[in-house]
Structure formats: C-alpha cells, structure tokens
Image 1: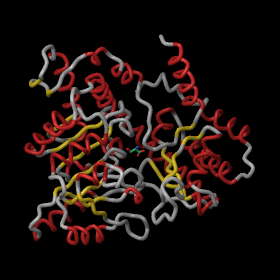
Image 2 (image 1 turned 90 degrees about the vertical axis):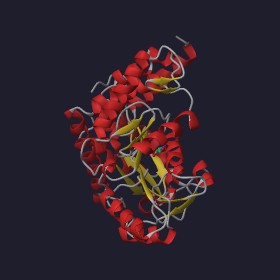
Image 3 (image 1 turned 45 degrees about the horizontal axis):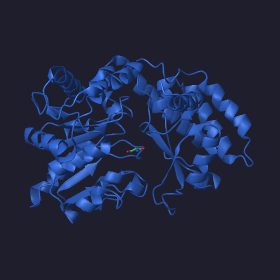
Image 4 (image 1 turned 180 degrees about the vertical axis):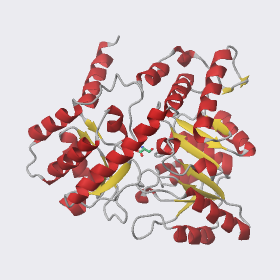
Length: 412
Ligand code: DSN
C-alpha cells in the first residue's frame, strides 16, 4: 500500500510479537474486531442517534449501532447505553456534563493514589471545569470506607466518583451506594454516584467482581482494555433522564460524527465478551497476575498484591531504582511496563517509585501460569542485575513470546 507506512507496521508487529506486553491498560483485539475497524462503515457520516440522524442513508448504520447498544446493555445488565464516545476521557467529559454543572464538587481518588487524569488532575479539563476534592486511601493503600464516609460529610459533593487506573484491589460498589444513600438522607446536596470501570470492565462482564451498573447512577468505560475491543469509550445508565442528558452531552455538546466503523468493532467485541470462553480468559488473567505478583513477593520484592488484572511493584524499595529506570531497563530487553506512583510516593510522577504490571494482553496471546512465574523471575533478574546482560534477557523474552499466538492472527 504505502511503503513507508508498511515498513512501520512491520516493525511494530515484530515488536509486539517478540515482546512481553505488561502494560495493564493494553490488550489485543481479535482479527474480526480489527476487520470491523477497517470496514466501509468508516465512510458514513451519522451525526445524531439511531432513528434521529442529521444525514440520509443511515438505515444500516442505525442497525449496527442499535446492535452494539443492545449487546453492551446485555453484557452489563443496564437499561441505556451510549456507544459513541471516542475514548474514555471523552466519555468522562460527557458524563460530568450530563450529571453536574460547571463548578460543582466531585469527590474522587487522586491520580497519585490510582485515579485517572480526568478524575480531577490539575492538568486535565476536569479540574478546570469542576471543583475536585479527593478521598485518600487508607494506610494500607486499600480503599477505606470509613474515610469515604467522612469525606462525603466533609465535602458534601454533587458527585462521588469511583473506578481507577492503578488500583489492584476489589471495590465494594454496593458499600459505596449505601454510604452515598446514607449521606443523601441528611444532606441538602444530592450526591450522584459515577463509576469509571475502564480497567476492570472485562472482569465485571465475566462476573468476577461486583457490577457497578447495579449501584451507580452512571458508568463509563473504555472498550480496549480488559474488554479486548477497539480503542473507544461507552456510557451506561439505568436512569432514563440521565440517559437523555448523556446523549445530548455526547452529541452535539462534545462530539460530532460518531466513528461508525469503531462502533461496529465494539459490537463485534461485545459479542466475543458474552461467550463462555471470555469468562475462561478473564479467570486466566486473574490467575496469571496473582502468580507473577506472588512469585515476586517470594523473591523478596515489595508488591501490592492483587485482586484483578494488575499489581504495583515498588522498585525503589526493592531494587533502589526509580520507576522510570525500571521501565527503561525492562524495555531494553523487550518487556513493556509503565512507571507508576506508589501510595505515599515521595518521587515526582515522571520518576515514580514503582511500575504497574498487568496480564490482560499476554494472557490473550496464550501466557500460562508457569510463564507468569517465569516472567516474575525474569523481571527480578533484569531489575537486580548490574550490569544488565541485555542479550541474555532479550533471548529469554523472545523465547517466551515465541510460544504465544501471533498478535495479528488472534480470533476468540
Ligand atoms: N491510559 C490509561 C491507563 O494506562 O490506565 C488510562 O486512560
């Protein structure tokens, strides 16, 4: 097609096939999902929603978007869904607009404690449009529902936000709902409950943790992490009035024409996610993540422990190097991770004391529990050894990755 672009594709495919991808927010979609992404659905303008478009010729686009909506609703047992957000950040942008007014107060977890940029980081639109305050984690880096209760009373927020980017433990959405209801019973401000389930959406769909759609007023997600779909966002709710406000907040407030090829790909992925084999996949992700975390602990490393697809490795405490240095060392042998703040971190985010490690992507390719343990030994060696034998570890990484499926040939 285009020699320059083709050459780059070949290099990236090789990097992905020969490497060990441990960034917990990444995954590989199926061939079928990728085919939908490159389909001719891309050529259609369809501003508006099924049955109410600003353009003609939307008969089949409407069928596709409706199918996507129905599949998503069935996956999470929700009454209403909007599948048009281009990303998780866009979904959150629209969600805030649908739920609260500019300047109103949102109680969320800070980025440094595992939250997300759009959960009130000073460099994001979120903190500039709304008044964000934060609930801290407990001393053991777990959510402390007593602290949440106190913060609800102290800040009297208009919106409580749960769902995180670097939180390795189970979340009790039911307890949060109870706390918000108790707070609302004696407060003049009515606090709404929003969950950003982007990281754990696949785990929820597979039934291995509480479903926030049963408790929250509104739930946002991305579709490309544990859900293994195309890169994009979605919004779910059971409240008909909120659903109407969500649609208006997505279009025309914050987005123009929906990406109908991506919506088709979301539909394909949601069908895959409803298969029994997806449940088996998620169970393997949980087992592999725990196996790697536990082996690192066995080797003497300071790790967070895990109830989901990710854990945090404190590299400063364990190996005396920063998260940035650890990320670079691992990358030099073909293991991809990202530096991450650890609870109570004293280093800046650009350095950080830890790395975030996840098993969603490698498990899609076929990583076994034995290999997850081997990967822990490899990580420990790479971060401990000085000088680092790059050639030796690179060969070990390639040997493991060579037993897995080709990233371009996956079918679920
Ligand atoms: N960038 C995603 C992550 O890595 O968690 C969140 O948006």
